Length: 150
Image (cartoon, rainbow, N blue to C red):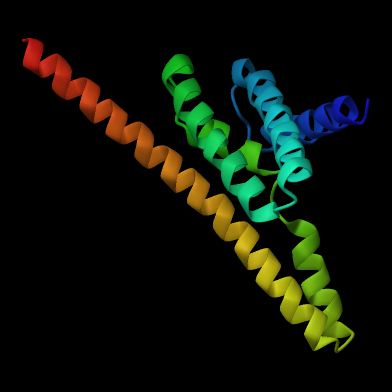
């Protein structure tokens, strides 16, 4: 039941951002559903591994793969799908706690939170970059195979 609630909350949050970003109406629901699905994947990966960096890396990698696939299918840029799907994963709480610990002059906890937030955002970025690189390599291989047949 918890997973289903998280799925719908993630979907709802992402749908709000699709409206804010003025995405085309025909991709809003798909993007929101993808975001909910990715959030569930993140939660399951974190429950299994208890490693947030790996969970974020794999989740963002999947966002990149699905975004590139949906971009081809819907004939839209991949960023239309990528950016809204990252919304639930962005470590906003981490940024809040960095500022909170800074104001409270608790520099030890602030430093730990800076490291955790930096690693999290780096994992998100790396996952997107790796997935898009992989998709481009696959496209080039397919293109060269088609050229050889001609």
